[in-house]
Length: 431
Image 1 (cartoon, rainbow, N blue to C red):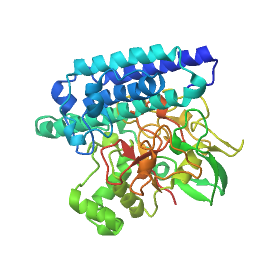
Image 2: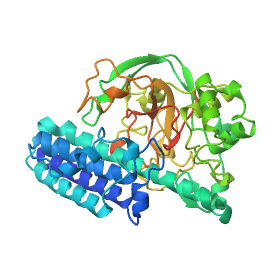
Image 3: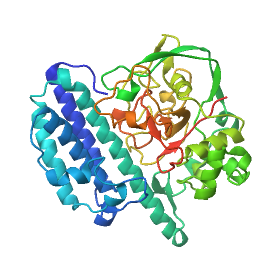
Image 4: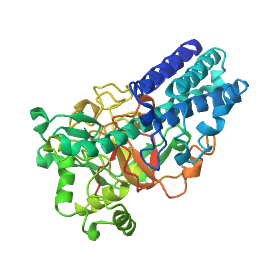
């Protein structure tokens, strides 16, 4: 996202990116009350106020303490805001928002001062890592707030006829939304010819788990042009998909019997959303739907080749549409819409093979367990990626409507337990 520039220009670009990202992060807290700030909406996720403090803690630890050699300015927060400090359930006792903001602002002021003298020839990957670190936590804040809204909307649902919390925001049905893809187009699949492609990323932006770039051979396969829509998923639901064990893996069926869910987490009955990607499904739900329609989930390599590879010039693209940075012309990202968009909204964002919506809108589950590439070296610490190479996490690709531009590219890898459905995730299928 930050191009190769002269030293002074690069520092200015880093500074602008840090400021732009922080502005977006803080906007999420406008008008927030203390109860929401400290609320744990789900046992797997920390309160949003904790994420805000953790962003400051991480910048201070890596830039000011490790690199600038400065003492910790807020030692009282070290245990509270460290990733390995307290269990998530104990992170609800937080300072007031005003105090967290003071912590955040004080650290940032020192960070920008240090940027003026920092040796970016050595530290460049760290600065790029930290802008993406905040981007990732900003997205977690966004979907935790969505969880809070969805929980509150269920309480109010009997008192209101407004369609609430549909993949990101409260909306009224609009006639224009009722136009859906032709059914033949919805199920359209694209042939990806056999051959090698370059997977991964060696650029300065690449995180440790994206490295090193390497060549992968894949046989011919077919992949959905669009993510699975709510209208398509409704067919699975009405056919008794949540009641029939034949579509589910053993682990998936066990999960379903425990969770007793009957629909995606961010589901709306309103058919106005039928052309939007299904959102808020676990890996198990995605796998069951794929089996229901006689397909399967793509491997990470299959997804990445279809999204990034340009066979005409024999190279991968940073983004599906090319190497031009994301804008609202190409995809739904950065909370620009605050909800999902119809899957055919961005023709300019198609991949070279013609896939729609591979970046933004919803994350897409893949069949692949999160693991290292050969030659992996952790950066900047073992706990970022390496501890998750445990065959307990599935890879997601592509980003959501809440993903910041600094964490948006075809090679970016997200990972979660297959039971998680709170994230803004959907999927597409292959055959």
